[in-house]
Length: 256
Length: 285
Picture 1 (cartoon, helix red, strand yellow):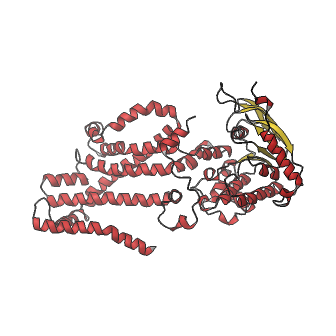
Picture 2: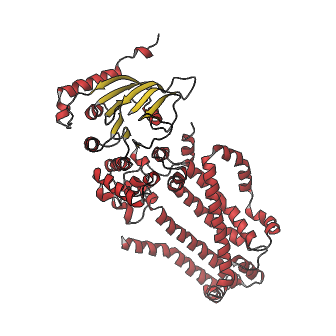
Picture 3: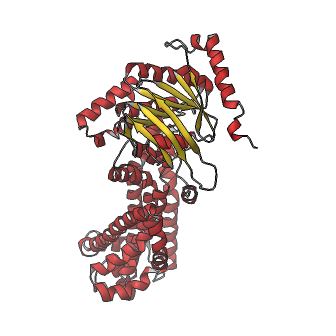
């Protein structure tokens, strides 16, 4: 469904590119995680995939349509919920903010907002302001905003990086639950290997400058559980595999 | 909570009352022609300003001030938004704007009298010209400081440009616009008086000057007191409006004085008003 081909982005023509020949595909209803160390060009990649900036070369196609601006079937969940949520709007206002411009009527916006807030367990907080909620709840509002937009693909940029561990585990399970219930494809970027292996069907290891170093199939049982899944020997193997793939010397970038 | 507010009010009243009593006591014994006792000033105030001069002088003054202030806010926000968005435009207009800003508005009274005549438009022009700068400069800073993530969010959700402006950029810049408008309000009151000193035939400033020239000292003082009260109430009114409109901003930056926002723990300490220079600098590629 999402097809990325030879994507390259160079900010400084003389310097090294931020992203070089990035190629991968994401299938319909797939849950794909991208792991990479910080500074490997994840942000550049996401901004290109979401159509916020144009790549230097290469193509992104969504359902066969080239992406040359933010696509209407794509929703973006940002890492920094405190900056992506607008403090002058209520929670419901934030969730419904993009919807009128999709052509939804007032009643449709209200219905979609209520449904999305219920899906993330915040049905009764619509009239609160984002800053009255905890960090985890704020990120759930951001997820609700993405759901209400009814995208076919969800792009998530380290969405749980700034919440505490327990909240993070809850949010991971909430996301898996949403993924199963909604007809949705998820591309999830993280620097946390445990999180990537736990969530994904496939993990793409990203190396600098952003390119896919390795694709790791996650052959864990489809039903994931924070305790049981993470205790499986296979979980540990996959985890070590991804870690070594991230760290292994890359012949392409070695000097000489 | 309520008791605290009452004691606060009482505390705030102590000094003004002391000052008035001290002045009155001194004025009664000194018997100075230029410093009449309070009873005399108060009597004149009641006679003149309650309410005979309200339609003839106070209202015209207020209308000119509000028109000038409204014009300043309108032009300041509109032009400031444009300049905040376009570095090219702000670089191109900068010298002209700096020149105009450096002109002391009273120096333009002769010019504006020639161009607009002695009517209200000359005065409104002067007030607007003097008051526009804080609004303009703060709007530019506010617009430039709008969070990049918030803009990316709106763009990724295909929110059209006009809605990004009215529902994101302007609300985000509103705290700074209000800060500018508050300064502008003070300037507007000053220039309201100044504009009435030359080429005017009514207004509070005109009355005060006329009284001074005619050695009607209590009348002069009554008008002066009125101007003070006017500035004080205008500011109080402004703060009340700001508190309503910017309740979210005050709650986030921890300046909320009463309930409402403080009912929940504050989590977003990181998000305070961006330092304009820092925010502007950070956005340069």
